[in-house]
Image 1 (cartoon, rainbow, N blue to C red):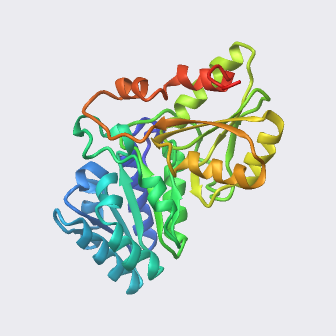
Image 2 (cartoon, rainbow, N blue to C red):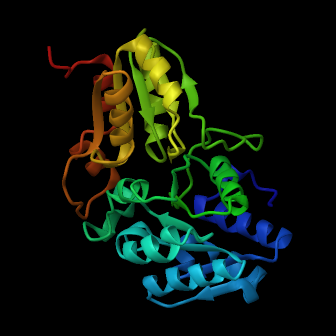
Image 3 (cartoon, helix red, strand yellow):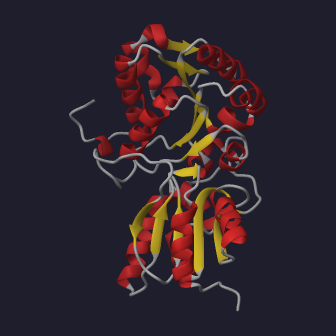
Length: 317
């Protein structure tokens, strides 16, 4: 792929390089963009490597999904990417009917999810994509935390002959895994072990959760930390086993606390093992133009807030 260690590259660059490799191996892999190929990394990496399999629809996201569905029906494997707000909210009807209802082999990639859209502000800060995509039949929903998991996830999606959605952070992210990482949507990855709390994270927030778990361990407070790359399907058994041990669950996600990872956790526990849960994330609000650090603090989802929740400091008596 490249001589540079993958974790030194931007996530979007690794996404594009992985697609080039897949296209080298399989002539059915095609990329469809809606005028944001530079933002998702496929311009120039993929567009120059495979110009005959790169389609730019212009600023027409619904058309992008329709074209992707048509290509899938014709036997191709289209990867359709855009800002998360455009790749999910704007085209939800097209995704529902042309992709999910038809069980078409389309891969949807939502870039810059949640507060990582930064200066684009509230209109572009989509806090609902995990929730709305998780609620759609025939759709799997992923949120990788580093480039190794991202690359493995894209490869898995390419061989999975059904609809799939993946969030993608665009910049460089801290290394969590390595080239030997094996993607398994059925199993959460346990990153630390303890009995004070069960900490559940996904995607971008996993790095913050890892830091919180390390700092807690230094204080003598150990937590079970599980990274869920897959919000759907959801590994219920790992959660249940840990919750039985700790009796206290904390979720953290770069999303609304309604319907996403926190929602999935609460649904499982309420039906199978009633357990107290603290959900960290955005509470029923729109975004705003601000720095990531400001928004992490405002929505009480930074490292210190994760630590406080795991200690049970704001747990009602």
